[in-house]
View 1 (cartoon, one colour):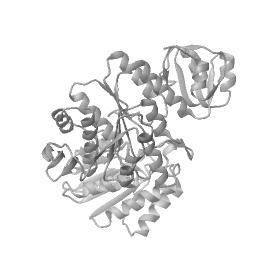
View 2: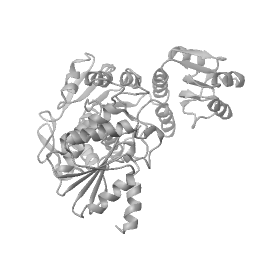
View 3: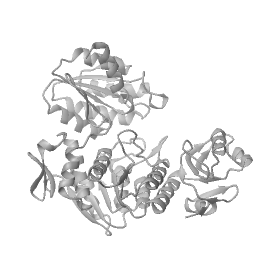
Length: 474
């Protein structure tokens, strides 16, 4: 399948700057580009153009040529396709890669505000553990799950060249954007490009405050995955009213619910399918509420892929979580690390930990460079969830471990702490993550529980804890 740059420019609604060429490489990132490839980047400068020239690339697609990029490209003879929306280019690259390298695959899309990474990875694990060849863009080492850059098309091309893929399990971010600009219809565009037979929607909550202004906007963006389907089944969380309402959005497809009161549900002694106990509670690797919700979603998807129940049971019972997904990183005291970084995630994670025996210590990283609104919402969720339990709260800016893009601004810290004070929540605050972790370890007893929550500001915590515990001899 050989394309011309002019045809590609038409498909991505762009303008070709430079000479038309035949393209027979793959769409990829600048760092991984090889001779004949097309690089897709939201922005590129003259240094990037020179790097592309050294690698022998065919062309560059970008929405933002900076500095002398256009002049450098013209001088070096590298064509540039200039687009208004880079997501059109990424959607085209994704569709093209699947059609060229994996056209016979059965495809599953997972989206939603919370739980999509674990659900995606669990479906993938069930398939792999039962001997099926599958690809996913979400894994335990590196989660290329935004589809904003062309990592996914490049990965599909690479894996399909090495083996015959049977399944693609793709996590699609429910919303994307930066600098206050939402990339509208992201889930719709990417799902349309993938053309899945199963779409899983986990929940709808307000996470990307600053990009989306209301829960209704979040619902619309998440629902794009259902609206984009041309065939198949939408697997929907019955316990979420907004997700449940998506069953009526697309007459081309059927809907299937999971959750309480449905044919795939959790009861006191385990997971039931069609009123039969299929996976006992003792066989579940974790019993937290959000893990069970993710497991139900993955199981429902696999049922519609006609995976045998025994294969599903083995896959779920042997599942190991992604990094920072309710991960146990130490015992005595029990230290649990979770990526909870929005109101729903914070509430669900704390409620799950609160069911365990032991005094609870919470170390929470404030979200840096994300604005006041998300930090106010996070602080409110935190305050309301812990007010009726026995807690010890330690808050940190993590300024010793984050880069400039994730640094907590003064107004963000002040907004977060003001909410805690309004709710009369007792806390201690540390600028440095290491100091916050040291306080938790020094004050907690061996029978206590330490919960680490937050996004980028908490990512290095497990590494820092290993160093501290080694010094302490723990």
